[in-house]
Image (cartoon, rainbow, N blue to C red; front, side):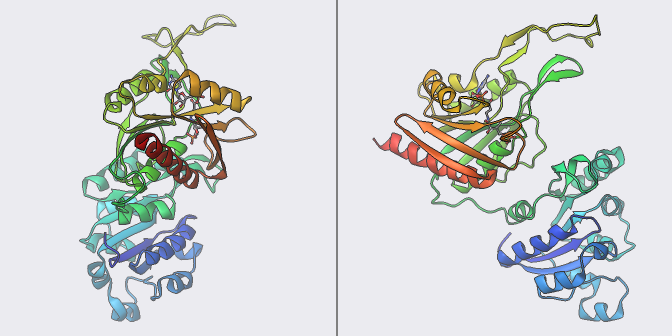
Length: 402
Ligand code: PMT
């Protein structure tokens, strides 16, 4: 998408409608011309006046309003757009779009539009998981619509789960497909990143896992792309949208992650192990569901292969960056990992109830390398990732020019 494009933003009725105001601002900041259409229920959440002020144009609200039709009729509005974005796209609007219903302005615009169609769903997690919604999403994808999100998190109704609208910045990035710079800090380099948790199967229905959301690793992948790198992300099971311009390989278990990382490591200049890989996996995976027996039972676990140490032991090895997630003695454990796993850098973070780290929006890092360290203060994982990538780039260039 170029910066002169005409974006028609259709806002449907959900609490996430307020985020569409920020999206309008960001789209204009990118240089896009923005026109807004709202459903009747969207106007219950945010006033058309807000969008008029932000877009600089009257807001289309009615299908059969003679004055609006004279200004720019709905068919002309659909023809005007280079891109149609529906954000938030409610379950109801998705159902209408997927079945070709056109009983209000937004559904009519959707049906009339011949430009690329982007949908940012937002709804309660149970509504998102309902088979009928998933069928509608699958049909819309087949028809060529691009679905952005939804994301995992706390919902206005009090539930937690998948259904939050993607953040305006993420939608904007996907729309503009922000091209990686040709002169970034990591231009010409290949970066391999692991992210998220692993799942270690116990029987056909149970597994051992941890609280990693993948946010740190995904933010690093996006930051590496923005630094100009060619990025491969090996991801455990998470509920995040793949960063633009990266290759994503999805895995479940530590063994699968190890296999995928080692298959790519030889072509990588830099490896960043941000995944929370299980240290142990059940020694036996039961073929049938493990049955309740007595009041106590025990599990036999065996060590998984250390992916980080295996990558660092390759010849030649990429510049290898590990993480250390600690609840105590952060510095000692981090320095021990730096030496024992023979890596170039360790990014250590406090984890646990009082610190976050896992499954939180923010994080802080104490980064160690041989003869040096730097503190990266608590901030959003996206900002922190950009800082860590800049530090890695500096260390990589130092190592490879001396
Ligand atoms: O995903 P988020 O919710 O955003 O949370 C981010 C995070 C807390 C998961 C992340 O910042 C982090 O600390 N990731 C590493 C978690 C971890 O497993 O730390 P560790 O100290 O147990 O492991 C040390 C290093 O060895 C890590 O780089 C890990 O990827 C690697 N490892 C561990 C075991 C194994 N079998 N293979 C490995 O490569």
